[in-house]
View 1 (spheres, each protein chain N blue to C red):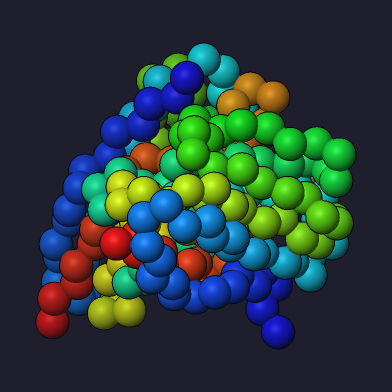
View 2: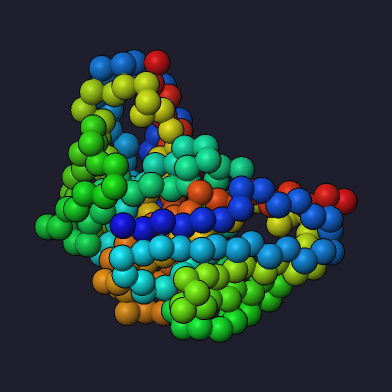
Length: 110
Length: 115
C-alpha cells in the first residue's frame, strides 16, 4: 500500500517562500505529483517528478529524491490566490493509479 | 464546457436510499476514477476503470458500485446510503501512464449529504 505524510497547515505572508514537504512509503514507485485545491473545488494538477531533481514551473517548483522517499513543493513570491490546499500523490509502480496525501492548507496573509 | 462534468453538484438523501452520481468527460481518455474526500483525509480512491470493460476496486469500495457505460461516462452508485457516506465525491480522468505530464483532470465534485 501507499502512505504519504505532509504537514497539515502552513501560514506565510505575501511575497514569502513556502516549502511543503512530502514523505512517502510505497510498495512501488512511479512518480510524485502535486495538486492544488481551492475551497473544495476541483483539484488541479501542478507538477510531476519521476526522476530525482528539481522541476520548475513559474513560481512553483517541485523536487524529488527517490533514495530518501521525499519530495517537496516550493511556492515562491506568494500571492493571496495561492491560499489553497496542496496534495502530494504517488503513482504505484505500474503507474496505474494515484494515492494522495491528506493535504497541506496554505494560508497567505497580507 | 468543462472537461469533466459531474451531476448533481449537491445532493441530500435519506439513509437507505439508492443514489447515483454521474460523470462524463470530453478529454477522450480511457482511464476514469472515483475519489471521496473527507476533511483531513485527503482523496481516497473508491473505484477506477481503464476502459469500458475494465472495473477495479480502490481502497474504500465497500458500499459503492460503479458502471462504465461508455468511454466518456462513469457513474458511481450508493445502493443503500448511510450517514458516514456523507462526503465530497470527485470523478477524474487521465491519459496513459507513459506520458510524463499526464496529470489527472478532476470534475467539480458532488457534495453528498446522507441524513
